Length: 132
Image 1 (cartoon, helix red, strand yellow):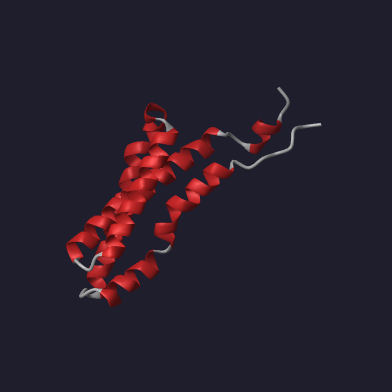
Image 2: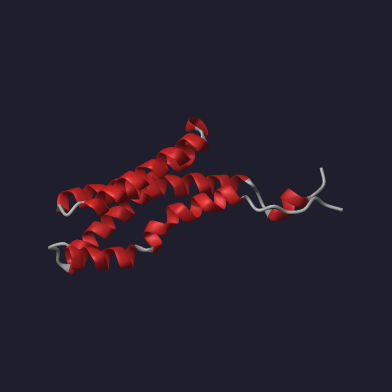
């Protein structure tokens, strides 16, 4: 009999937290358009900056998770996401909103990179359940 399968819940939670920003981007861009003196194109550009920052974090950090440690990177990414998105939500100044979106996007990308590398390190389900 094999051991019961357990899901890596911390990695699932990290991936979910990191992926919330891209998932909610259409709502975010709509709120930027209606809540700030921005055109739809400018609000979309801020959303694009958020996604580019998130992708940059993934490219820069995915191969370095072991070097820095997953806990340090996950905590740093979560702190950057909270600070960036929180700062952007609390201000009405467009430059501060852009900076917050970029910082928050980098934090989200960091968290997603940590979670994805951790999930990839688990291997296939068959490899995890085979007796050793």
